[in-house]
Amino acid sequence: MKILIAIVAYNEEKNIAETVKDLQQHNFGYDIVLIDNGSSDRTAEIAKKMEIPVVAHCINTGSSAGTLKSYFLYAYKHDYDIVCQFDGDGQHVASELPKIIKPILDNKADYVIGSRFITRDGFQSSALRRLGISMFSWLDSMIVGYRITDITSGFRAYNRKVFAYFAKDYRHEVYDTSQLLLLSHFAGARIVEVPVVMQERKHGVSEYDWYNAVTFPIKGLITIMGVLLQIRKTRRFKHGLED
Amino acid sequence: MGWKIKIIACIIGLIYLFLVFRNIKKNGLRPSYSFLWFTISVFLISIPVIEPFYQWLSHRIIGINDARHIIYIPLIGFLLVYSFFLTVKISLLSDRVQELISSLAIQDNELQKLKSKEKTKTVE
Image (cartoon, rainbow over all chains, first blue to last red; front, top):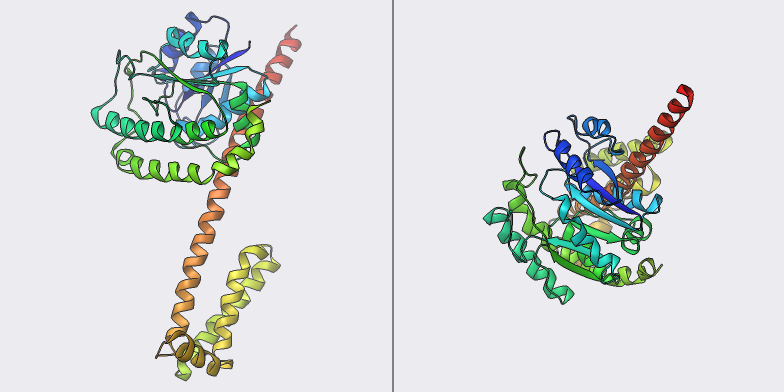
């Protein structure tokens, strides 16, 4: 099984070295790639020095969701079987990776989300953000019919069926984790959540500010509505998940 | 409808028509984008020519007493339709830009790999 760990980063020069070191120390046979979302600092340079291949966006494409297409396409073109997203801000822990990969290896899931809120160990995010996450996790759970607790978690693993679908069939921008989850669900993916432990970022600030806090619920609702309107179209592409 | 407003509408229509044709000729405006501008230019030019028709349309059909409003209503409608049309186009373009950025970044990565392989070969 070829496994790819895609580190996604934007201006993380203070965190990237530690993140890469953590992944290299716990490497059980996976490849690592850095998806640099148009950083203006030394993020890509540091990763290159640590001998990590870098896929660098020429401009920033917004939130970390803007990197999805790149690592899906990279994994698809390089014939990987599993791809995991790993945030470059130091919040994700490499020793937790086997937890999100195992359900795919056991053929129990196509898409695995590492959730902070199942066992509630480790870093839990701010109260305001937790409120938004729980609201949308509840809403998405109602739509898919099973419990999702950490809809915005960036600690995720996908098998080839899922990333091939988004690299090949779904030719639109994926800009939201909720959209990704619902589209995958309606396209026939088996989605599983597993408990993971995360840690607080050591340097820098999160991309989620007050502006995001205000616009997140509105954009989130429109996104969900958009996916629901696309159900028929999504099902039409279901063959993408049956390769 | 006063002759002044008819002349102004006609002049604006002619200017728009001139700009539309000029930009199509220079490949500055695609025919699909120019369609709505062309329609509105023709509408403005037609006001002094077929004014009785617009009078009849506004009084009898739409129920507007002041025929001058027949100019503003289609213009506002046109701007709303055009803004919507442009938003749809922008959304489509963002999809394509995202795909291009991703493809370009991956190809750049492959190029770097090839270059470093070549360097290693040259050193050997």
